[in-house]
Length: 236
Ligand code: FPP
Image (cartoon, rainbow, N blue to C red):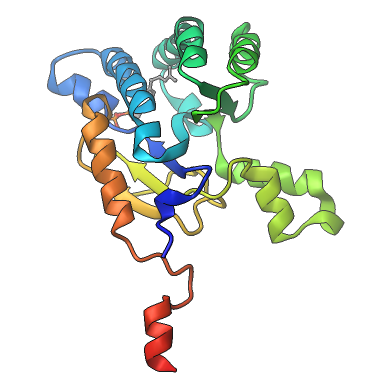
């Protein structure tokens, strides 16, 4: 049987990066320090992903509901995003990583949409890893917007999947930080995702944790609502 890891385009793994604030509080640091440490974890995970068979990695950096956080924290996150785009683009391009950003761009601070467009253009040729960062992202809003674009006549499962999931459905969805919820992330795309929850706070999440999540995924029996071949044979 073909392993899910053998697929040519690789696995689509998605991560809800949670726990930055608690990581910082446990160290007596401001929440922003947790977010800064979280950027280092992003770098580690993006570097480790291709060797683990991951072709697409989608990271939840800022949800549309995160605008409700204090202005100071939101401003800090936007500054981090700007610095990440400015500081990482060249390294990503050199490592064959294609960067794309999903989510709304019209509410981002001035200059960031342009920085995103520059980073996307500069990394466009990357074919080792498709790194997608979700910013001002809401899955429910993305589904509504896609439905509006398609119109009643154009609506179908395939058309919606095409409109939403460029790189295909999510295979493995990881959430760090101990919570067990989806928080409006990739709801359509993760219909058959295997879920992996870990207590690890995001800034502490490293390559070994990603490898453990992929190993957990590889041991799952994915039936997509059907039966697996041995069971079918036994029943026949
Ligand atoms: C959740 O932890 C994390 C976030 C809301 C932000 C994630 C952002 C980063 C990892 C860094 C910025 C990203 C880029 C791409 C530059 P939380 O703050 O909700 O943690 P808590 O639940 O412990 O309070």
